[in-house]
Length: 546
Image (cartoon, rainbow, N blue to C red; front, side, top):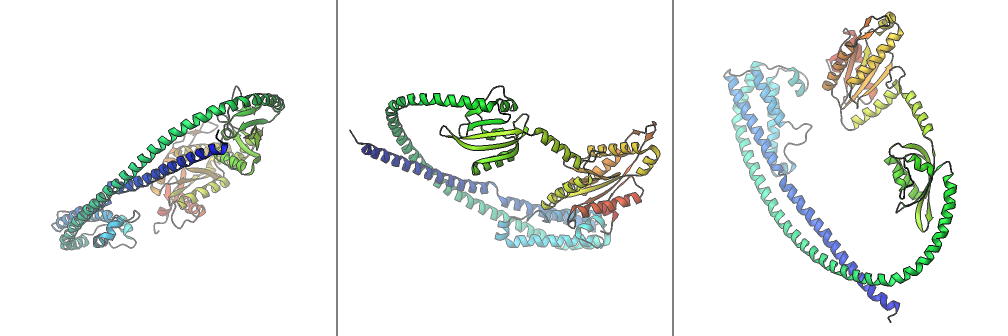
């Protein structure tokens, strides 16, 4: 009979051979993944020919320039108006304009054909000069002249003559640029296809090697499986001998578990004892079973599944895994009707397995009282809206978020016109009714993402994130119209109508915080009231010189 050491030597040799084959297959799989990624990346570059975008862009510029040239000749023949030429120049400039959208010509093309890219930049400068000359000479930026100036026939004729003189040469250079870009794009595509073919050859070789390694590994695994089957027969006898010992020990454990279950089931707290890996429940008391909405105690339950909030779950489990215990952490347990509990947990050893011991106390009533107190501290009692302090805190955070991500936002300052007359004529109860009706109408006109608060008295403020002045102006007009159509009745039955004035300010670069933006909106509100009330006035309209 072979000695144990002699039996272990072939087994160790077989294990090493299997590990070597497994390592070979893994290496081949990694090589296949790398070759496939390499090939797919080249195929992706080939499937997205950026040069075609450049070709389309230059062709579009050529077509727009041809239209401008034709319109210039028509203007000289008095067959078109000066404003038509200005509009067509604006279209050509917008085609060439790259501000805020990155380079229209790809980086690769700029490096390969710098003359073509510089020619397009020069043409954009020339078109901007033509557009400026065709408009009346107004101070300010080019964008401002396009929106404020009007075309002058004399200047437009001079520009038309200049366009006629230069258009043929410019069109010829653009046609040459189209041909050059087309040739460059074709060469790049051919080169990419050749590289892709070479990479497919490499991928085929790597896949063949992977197939060979997998075949060898499967053969080795079959051999090991047969050896394992023989070893299992030898272990069967040993297992039968151990069953008697396990049965005796099991009876002792069941007696101990029954005693522990009686003690913990009568506890006023929630108690759970479950294995970490398998989730097997050693004990769960009746109180916790009811709180989870279960009719009977579950056979398996994982501790993370008890915690309702994902962030709390992650923090709880990290603390438990790192320190082996958690003490009095507030968390919600349950899924359908979660309730707040003060939870404590320990990592313990049960029958040779790592287990979670959890106990906790119901604090739902305490948390509900805290929520009521927070609501009272942030809400205006009359209108139900955010009070001034809560609005300033949340609007500051929302404004900073929009500014950090380069998103626009707009503030509306809203004030009820002649509110003192309502109080004086119909009483303060009617004034309170008007404030509540106004708050409800404004809230219905805003989006869920918008922020609305009552700053005090008859004054409201709204912050519209991701909204520019034009869209915010439409919302403001909708609010003004809704308030004007409110049909309220006084305690004596008399109809009560009132209007509002709205000052609006959109965020700009000089607005470093929410307070300057609200100050601009408040200034616009003051001017709206001075201009007759019942209107919407933007900060820009209040300061046309800006």
